[in-house]
Length: 486
Image (cartoon, rainbow, N blue to C red):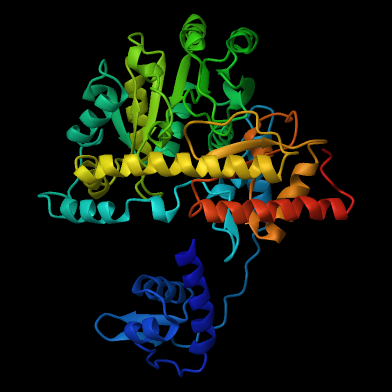
């Protein structure tokens, strides 16, 4: 967070300074900027790159950075109003309507303004990401013979074998496809398993990125409630029977956003309900490597004991490493695997080989296990700090479940669900960004919620300050007559 803020502040300073140079004038060297602004070389590099992207600066290798030539006048805007008619063409009686709404995903992808504490983040804080190990892995990967050549469309055999071992001893490398991260895998699975217009059963609440992918594909998400033990089997069986759905998407381990783990007594029943309905279970196992150090033994994936091919398993390295290491896997058995393969090839051909090679280097290095142990310990500490701070300073926000994995807490607001939007806005004004709960529901939510991320911040001190700001936001709502009743 600090490095990102420093870069933004440096960009602001340099943007004003660039105007004092004539076009083609040379800017101070990177070393001079480091000394003058007391920032790191990385911060200077990022700031200059931002100015280049804005067209204010050009760089010349070996020479430095220079003020860009004066821009020409912006081109006259055309008339794009015709597109409204064209894009509405999918709303006719014979066409399945599609909704392409990424707002619920962008909440966790867009960086908040400088100085705002990121309680809405979806990835590990940069201080928890294995940047040195990733850099070393990428450097070693780049030196491998053929590293920039065309990879097999299914993925590198060694990487497929590694994912197969991770998912379960009964899987083989031939059951695995390498994907460009978990979101890509989920989208491929949804397109493969259900035709446009079909219902798809989803946990409620659930991951907004999956809901967005389903709707963009023309599917109709149908909610099945979740409690502290995961999706409720009796309601799932009813949903299969009444909707005729042939797909369930679930997160049996550290469910997003609740953190619930599917209870042992429910696991077999969930798979059996799908099998009896002739349906697939898409198992999104996104958080297995985000387990906390104080968690007990983890249940195996549903796919590990599924000889009939009911479960299509999704796994990714992204969440536990870096947002940019977009390497994941789809595992499936039977004819569905060929359909998954075909859709992936049509969409993207293959995952870039350098990323696959770097992923192999990373998971095969001694740094990998050290990184996992560090993340497990840090997430446990941060969860404990955030839980204590919320219960002490925000007692009116109900925390029903304290997870032992993942990076977030799910809080229920008192009173009407309409208060959620007011609190999210007030929090941002107070300097802390939180994720609203509404995008996690595909139907009317039972109450207002917010999701707080402890994984995306620097540590307990920032957590304490973020909760203090959130308390300030709640109190501010009370002063404005829009309080959250206790």
